Image 1 (spheres, rainbow, N blue to C red):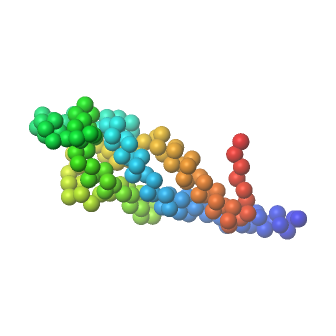
Image 2: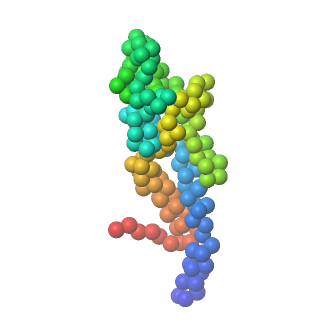
Image 3: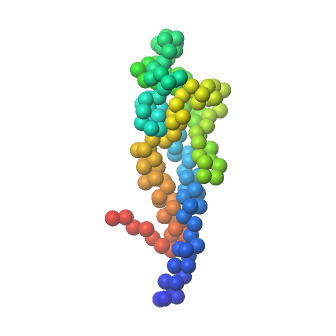
Length: 157
């Protein structure tokens, strides 16, 4: 019995929580773009503030004209900055992970322009979505890794 206990302690000491967390984020990074798209649709950035263009909370008069004439669905929305016209940008959103760095990326040719004229938090995940990501993806993954490597089961009350 004590040998089993000592073995579990040794496995727990050897368990790398930082690496487990990084693996959990990398394995579930594809869950983040839908969360960012939801924020963009609401016209909010990762700080839960209105999206801006060159510091303005709305589209330019020319963009409003274009959206009124050509936009459909979310592409016609002008009461908030959604960065949506055809949906190509939203559909191309993906997360790139490199070590502990994770950031949104897109292959649309105007992605650089979007990031240039928008607030830095435009493509960050907001507090509510970070919590959702942690509860639904990160923690279950870390708990599964902990169980696999140490035999320890995490219970929630």
